[in-house]
Image (cartoon, rainbow, N blue to C red; front, side, top):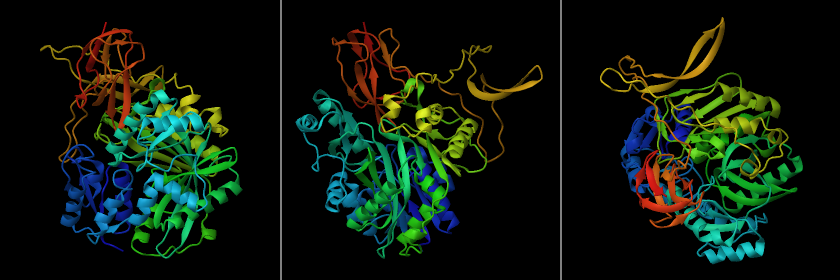
Length: 588
């Protein structure tokens, strides 16, 4: 086993890897951007090295900077986490070319399976059919139109070198093809460093079922169990669970065998996930993620296996000491992703900012894997995952009710989160009966009851005319002898902290969930970067028409007009940075 490992990532997954390494007696090395100098993964690591830059491209996607940190630290191994370079064969070769162990599959396997196009070809060659689609990179909008006309609409454009819904666009007609292609390529480049995209049929009502596999370098490959990841929005997962509910055992075993077949066909080693779409009793190969998945904790709960520890052991050349028949699965686990997003009205608008308070839940069978603590900042430049709340129960209903209880105990202020939407999903009869699909959240779930987060009331000025900042606090009040917990906006009080501790909270900046005022003043609802302006002065626009495209937290968001009329002024251009409430256009 190696003695020192560099984690080439940030946030929750970097924290997760560091914790297992500490248990195994492995010294950890963190890397960080200019914005992450005081991040949680940096605080927990034994050593840390600066990458420079702020954006992902300038830091966590900077090969030379990461390899320089490897050399300076003397790390013997590198764990890529997920996202960033985790599925980049060139990066894996650059690491191993320095004599450093890459904790993941061989570069050749990444090349075959990390590229979603070649992975489809490999799966089909191994006898595992995929979703109908093209096995060539997408180059022209006319190809989308031809495919849609022959296979039926809608169709899906996907990033060839990524996953997690990043760079995926659903196209409902030929007229949307060009814009969808452009947007998918931008997101793929920003998040994975590669702009290639491909095309496949978008199924009507499928469930997203994925199979966790583990393979050693001696030729043993096992499937550990499946996860149902069907609760999604923007093609990104919200809730995952294992085992998949209402899922026939014969299909489970056939899917597990198919996953192992795919893994062996590409010479796979280490942990990986083979993803399938399941509909009407049939399953289709979707893609293989050649890395650790965000949702791996639910498999850990039901199998009792530490997947990061087994990644490290396999990477060090150790054989798996158990067989397929010895893999045991017990109980039911559910994971909820807590993202910095405002789900008001089902919009899921990114909500970067400073976390004033993060109070985790507790109790039997509850686990929170977070990359942030109170006082940390969620940046617009990176993924918006704050953490993953995972629960275990002896059966699905116990786990579901435990999750509802744990979410109710979780307190996060300063940024909006997806927790209100998660509560609606978990309590819905369709979810309880396992009648949901990948399209259920966006097509059928009513999230209109989710209200905007509280905004601070106007503050009174002091004698000098200054308004004291206010912060949202949960306080205790007693009325007629009964105790209540309520949330109030109160004046900020500076707390004198002991040496080495953090000082009191800063004021929360009010956030708007709207995309315009209705008066013709178009404002942006969040901090981000303008990637495209779609109108010009003199243009006539309709209500709901996209004025510009804003990138925040690696997601593209349409900023729309809330008034029909003529554009009299455009105040931004592509590449401009904007903040919440900034005016970008005027309409009369």
